[in-house]
Image (cartoon, rainbow, N blue to C red; front, side, top):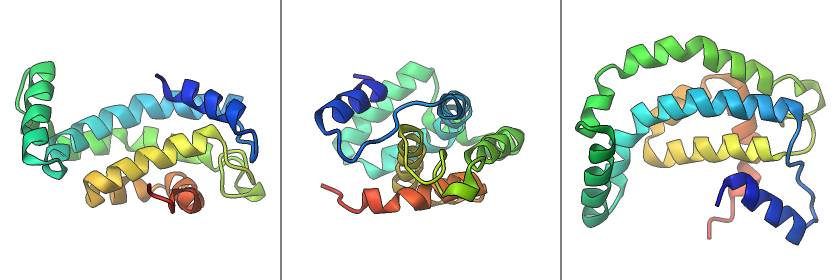
Length: 159
């Protein structure tokens, strides 16, 4: 099931407090972020993810991913610095979009969180769990950091 479908189900099942599921700005940010973050996180996190798994799960994960990409996971890290440098402009542009309503509040749409905020915060939390360095690298962009920090209260319950 897609995240958007899950969000729609949750919103219809638990309407209070309401979460804005979509907006033009949100769709633009999500689309651009999916393209750039998926690429960057794939290169930086996929090879490191194996190390937070149990040995058995790590072995399975490695075998499946290496079969899928056709090479050892560690090879993804070979040009990691250059990839981050090349993505800087796009990451900065998306960060700026996230701050479009900064005067109204810390979330993408201002004072109220939306699906887009949780999408961004979830991706960053995933990065933080796998590798703090990757998380710090993306958090240096104000928009990403601002949205993540605004969503922290929603991540306190970890069950």
